[in-house]
Length: 265
Ligand SMILES: Nc1ncnc2c1ncn2[C@@H]1O[C@H](COP(=O)(O)OP(=O)(O)O)[C@@H](O)[C@H]1O
Ligand SMILES: [Mg+2]
Image (cartoon, rainbow, N blue to C red; front, side):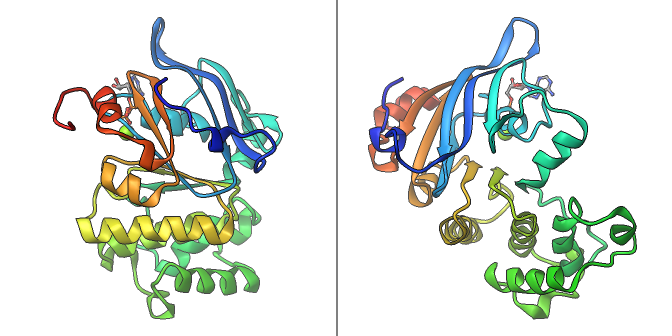
């Protein structure tokens, strides 16, 4: 470990929302992709996870929302170790974790409003979900979110497949926040977007994180974007964390260690 930002880890600081304790993942026995990762995440701001392709960034995120089963270690979230939970307990955990995807994962033939409301599906009875009958307060909240992601009520009845990439990602973010999550995970949320739209989406994630006090963990390729919008950078290489600290502490030397090569000097 090359750097450890004391401000991030000070005892008595903001309560920890998520704690990974020696988290290990082996897809094939004896070949760990995550090598006993230990990280705490508190309530404030965006944490960017950077590192080369294949280093385990997506695996880390998928372990937390349990799309992937960790091999060993703990994932403390809302007072429980969720590393091995199943069934209804797992569904309850997933309600509390909003996901934002590279390819948006919207239901293309549904409207913007319907897509945002699917963020409530974990909360409403199945028959109401099936009939797409949502409570008035949920609909009111969805309209609020539509505004706060910068789309506005005009978009409510547009079909998802008629939107641009940036607009889709705004809907994806609104859907995630509609869940009332305690944590948001975003796996390469800007990788399908042009540079200008990427900036806007990172700005939106940082804004929502700050205003709603939701920690956001973002896997991101673009180091400049990470440095600009994250309050903490976690640099991974080969399944290990090799940098954990503030963006302005991340030097060319750290980047060489994370990505290899000399081109950062
Ligand atoms: N479902 C899987 N089964 C087997 N190997 C996988 C699976 N998912 C990812 N891997 C492997 O784990 C390593 C880390 O992948 P990933 O977490 O996707 O990295 P990153 O997101 O940093 O690019 C890679 O070598 C990848 O091939
Ligand atoms: Mg990935």
